[in-house]
Image (tube, rainbow, N blue to C red; front, side, top):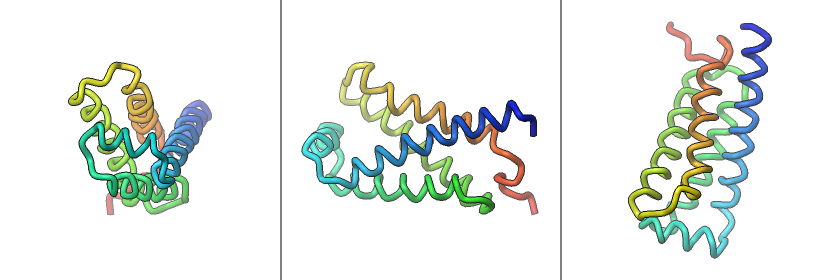
Length: 125
């Protein structure tokens, strides 16, 4: 893996981890704004806890060495959660500003996944 690709991978991965960690923590803290947002999107309140826990576990999975299959699941989960957020905001008619965070996290997920080193990929055995 080239030095350039390693730098791209780590920058994208650290920003992704920061974004998922911060939003995961916010979703686990009972904030009025988060509760109103999730209700506005049409989801039950317990969905915040599920998302928060899954995001934090996903961050751990992509940052620890090895466990390629687990990393694949974490990347897929991040992609599905954030694309679901985009679709949910569009479905309720939110403006484009609501889409910025989820789209940024989708882009970081794809970049991190694409540039991950061989030792962080799922083995074909």
